[in-house]
Structure formats: C-alpha cells, structure tokens
Amino acid sequence: MKASETSKETVYLIGAGPGDPELLTLKGKRLIDEADIIIYAGSLVNAKVLEGHKADARIHNSASMTLDEVIDVIAAGVAAGKKVVRVHTGDPSIYGAIREQMDRLEAMGIPFDVVPGVSSFTASASVLKKEFTLPDVSQTVICTRLEGRTPVPEKEQLESLAAHRASMAIFLSVQNIGEVAARLRAHYRPDTPVAVVQRATWPDQKIVAGTLADIAEKVKAAGIRKTAQILVGDFLGDQYSLSKLYDPGFSHEFRKASR
Image (cartoon, rainbow, N blue to C red; front, side):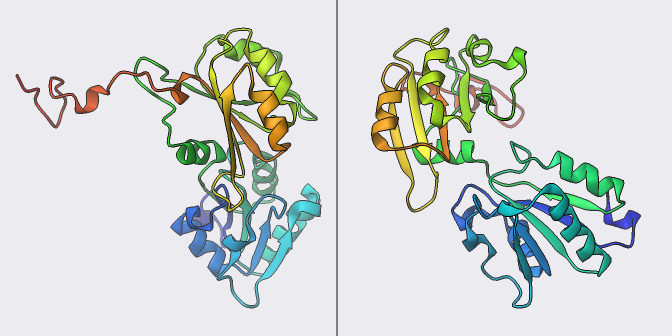
C-alpha cells in the first residue's frame, strides 16, 4: 500500500538488524529519528538503535504488549497525524510476526511500508567469516526452526530438511540443541561442522564451534540457552571449489575468457 493512495501518514515496519546499532540501515535510522511514536521489541532490539530520536517522541516497548495494543497505538498515532514506526529485531520478514500486523493495518486503511534489516543468520555468518553458498559444497540455504509453541508443518520437520544436506540456519531452537543435533544426524554426517552464535554482533557475543557429535555438550557447557543461531553444514569447513565469476577461463557479459 502506497502513501499516495491515502492522506494518512505511512507507518513503517523497520528491521533493526541483529544488535550492532551500526547495522541499522540508513533508511531505518532516518525514519526512527523522524518518528513521533516508536514501538519497538524491547526484549530483542538493542535500545541503542533508538538513539537520536526526537526529544518528544513517545516510545512504547512491545515486549509487554498484545497485538491489539500495538495496533491501537499505531491507529491512534496515525489518526492524530503522527509519524509512527514499528521496530523489529533482525529482518522483520523472518520470524517477525509482521503479516498479522500488516493485515490489520490494511483492513483499517492505514498505509504502511516495510524497511528490511540484517537478519541474525547473515550476521552470524559474518562474525564467523563464512559464506553459506560455496561452489561444490552448497548452493542452498535453509532457514528453519524446531517446533515450540508455534508448530512446524509436518513436511518441514528437521529430518526432512536435513535430507538436502544444504547449508542450514536454525532459529529459536538452541534450548533444544541436543534434539536438533540428533535429528540432523538422520542425514548429515556426525562430523558435520556446526557453529552456535549467541547475540551476533552484540558486545557480549558468544561463539561455540563443534560438530553434530559434540555441539550439544559444548553449548550446554557455555551456558547458551536462548538468542542464538545454529548454523550447520560443510560451508563451515575449508573444502570448496573456486567461483567461476573470477576464473580467467570463464567468459561472461563483462569479460572475455583469457586463453
């Protein structure tokens, strides 16, 4: 929905990134600084991303709010002609629960836009200095989670996804790391490398590396129980083929192959 379709102020749903406030996009930063009303997920979003906001901006921590309460604050702000932003952790399109918010706003005729952010799974790869998509290793990244209070469709059970042996990023599941490792071993080798990154890019970031055979023990010893990514796959290893993109014998639109 575009602002031009209505005279109402556009609401922005902003991805705040994984933690480091400098990983907030320039657009997200500008919109937060301009906002009259800020609703942010205080249990996950680094409060430093809000620094620079207007002195008279009203700030709401959604950690203790229901969906109805969030929508009520947005609707009241829009009705009063205020600029409203809703700040989510990481990228809001991944486990961000924004679809239900967008549907409610659309039904109410409130215009909105989404500003993407850096997801915790790409932030985790960055701090590990790894690439998910290595030639002859994996060209697929699977983002998934274990079932919890939110169920997972039967066709997306971890064992089924593991059959692809692709690079995998597992969200919201580190509290069950033993179960994760056991279920992945249905298809991955026991010595498949695994890295667990807690609070990637935060000052208290913690990294634990191991294999499917020993990662559960290492994670428990490190005391990691939440806010962590589980990355699995041979992309964490050192064996791969070089990309064709920079191969002198490979031609493409911008370069002819050398003999």
